[in-house]
Length: 375
Image (cartoon, rainbow, N blue to C red; front, side, top):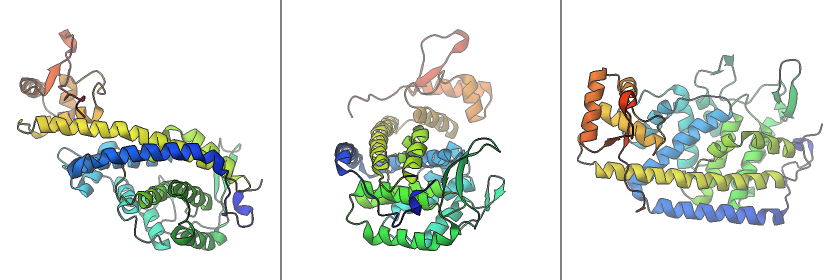
């Protein structure tokens, strides 16, 4: 088995430009449409939109690697860093804080130099305890001399999908990568540069753990440099998570190839387009939430009511399965059944909630959603 990094001048990739014309044009068209929509949001709504995207990106880039982060913990971390309300949110975990800090640094500080020290600080932030699960790892430094392999399957019948360059090459490989990042890649089309940076870094695989998350952060940084915009308004990791099997398949094919990465570039551009399309829906949700709070700017809410209403807003129209019931309100607000009934009734009287059709023993409620046709 020969891997791409075993070829001489392995990082001088080639591709079929004709195969990229259509997916690149489509990706740029959707990107431009989304950014125009963001411009119309205004500063306050843009910050809310940025928060929603960052929450998605944090949860999903962790999930790709099998790490589960609680969404409310991530929301708390994001809200504190963006100066948004945190009432009713739990304290953020150290893991959530570390990943949010990494992603924000990569994008908000996209014009700062990329250095070895910065990469190591990102990786250390992902593992604040020095452990990955129950396993002690090297944090904030390159991996050790043991072979770095990507494997699957049960013990004794493992399948090796990829083996990274040996550790004694890492200093040179990272030095070459950073030089390419700062100078050698400036003549490459911006979206292709982001895709190549992702592929090259994940192929070098310099850390014991966290390589995928850092590769995706580098992708976001390259996209921010291309757009000259320090806020992300689409989550590539959300799409990669949805298409994870194909993501790993196309990576493996090109990592075992001769340096022609056309397949990876086409997949990346098409995945990027789908990520932007998904974000257009998410931005619309943010606008709906903003109109809701505009309508109820003078409505009185206690902290419990506001927390429950925000849960319904986060779920979106029809997204809160089974509707809001007194029992669910009790669970979310940590109050008695009598208090829950009284507070729900007050929200109905203020035209914040409406009772869903039906009734009897299964009474449920939903928000009175603002009209979405005027967007």
